[in-house]
Length: 400
Image (tube, rainbow, N blue to C red; front, side):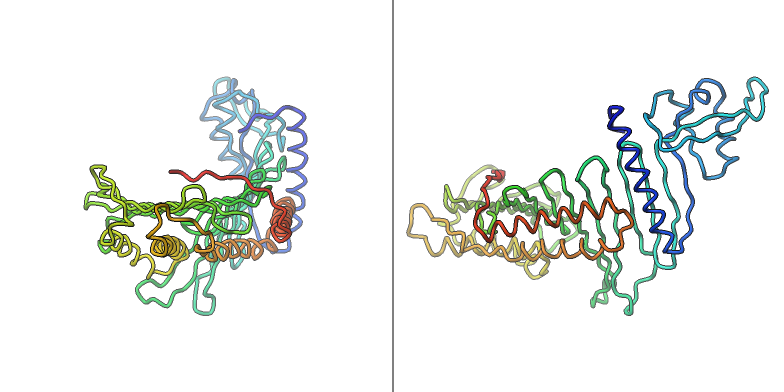
């Protein structure tokens, strides 16, 4: 647990208890049942005075209410507790019975909050961190073709939060009845990270600059495609391309890299396309159409798959090659951001934000909802700045 000074601890505990009270009022409307468990225990008498068997017996006596191992094994302070309770137990070493032990607890969990559709879980911590998750337990059917489960985290001492969402849905493919999308959004200071499956978009909300990353690992089981792909692009506040790079690695059957096709574009250096052999030999793809064609073939299976990340990668590679073809007579192939279509990136971002809005209305934690609203306001503010053309520019370095 992160160490806080006493003043911050008092603020954290006060705010967490306030969130707990509001959450309890909210969830009562669900007609759900649950049990409360107290953890991160502290009691010096338990630590120094009785044996482990007596502590275990005390836990069993109270059912699922307390977890006391932390108090037995450690005498270290937990700071200001969320709860204090008197527990009654025995001391086998001295023969004393029905001894009162005053225990402090730094964490409170609400388990098995089950309704007819979902299972929910809360965890409240005295360092200010609050976790909430929802798992849909209703079976997916043609009448109910989508299910959304998620995990959320925030701390009452900051504006940061994170949400991880899994969207399950039926497919039309008889070979794979169900498919899932993994979506996440996390705010850390002014850095907003959005993810959709293997697409990661990191945005500086102060400047509007974005870094887009896509990693596709080599899959030994997919014999039709022996390639892995790494893509990075820096976008300006208006979503035009500032710089970008794609590396396509071909692999042997044992997974080792056999060769690399690399496309680089930037305003400073223009557009470059090269092939690097396993032994380090560099070949300029602008002078070798056969190798350039091989790179195209490596992307074709991904393109036909039509996932958002495949479209982004394929569009970038195609745009690079089209720009090369238009400027082959030039010694340095010039860069024009209008050649690169980043519309799929914008669509992906919009989808993540829309999913966030979809679940916001059912979240039972007012502090989390407030942070989401503040984040959406920052995004809207940045969007308005882009329209006005007053955004500052911050360079995000793309790995070379």
